[in-house]
Length: 132
Image 1 (cartoon, helix red, strand yellow):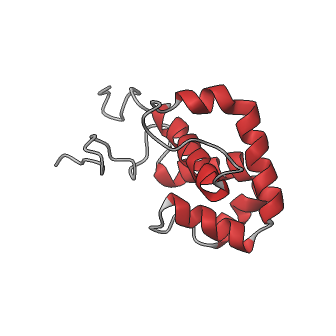
Image 2 (image 1 turned 135 degrees about the vertical axis):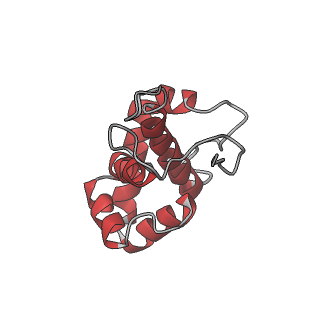
Image 3 (image 1 turned 60 degrees about the vertical axis):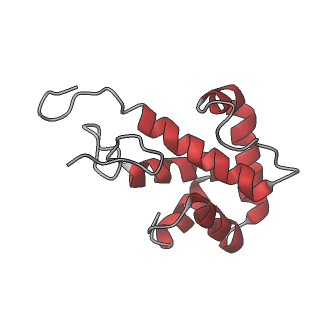
């Protein structure tokens, strides 16, 4: 059976890579990287991804957590990784990251791109059966 993502790409990101990375782990790493360790603890207490969209995850974390602290952490993450983050997706995809115009959207875009970076690092690795 062949799996395709919503955009028609072939992927099975809910299965772990040979390095143990799956979409759930990638989201946990992304929440920690973008919003901080406290946000990760909240994310875990909420049950993780739990079939939520990225914007739902961000909205809930900003609602229940220290919004100011999480926002400042996300802004620092962007400032320190701006070039890398902007190169993760083509200019025509994603949304512009501008905290003054769309805070929630910008944090969500950072979360998605950070998650993507973890999954992209797994592409091309050898599977357990030796296939690349």
